[in-house]
Amino acid sequence: MSESAAEESVFKALADPTRRKILDELAERDGQTLFEICSRLAMKYQLQSSRQAISQHLDTLAAAGLVSSRKDGRYKFHYLDTTPLQRLTERWHKEN
Image 1 (cartoon, rainbow, N blue to C red):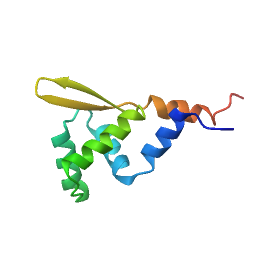
Image 2 (tube, helix red, strand yellow):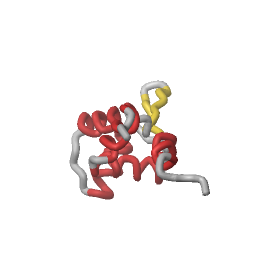
Image 3 (spheres, one colour):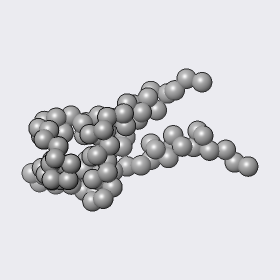
């Protein structure tokens, strides 16, 4: 069974520990700006990645459908979307 491109992008996105931490932070408090995400990662995990690096991680997560963004004035807010994860788990879930 071959994986679809969408499934492959989700697995790729989840393979990186920094991206998993970003998802954890959005699960804890959804709708954060890039600055807020960077600050929380630095305080909670002592992760000293640049804003550019975190922005690239967010782009990868967005490409996989795991993060959506909404611009409001000068700010861009990021939100967790677990829909791709639900689709993945359905492949192993069988109705009895």
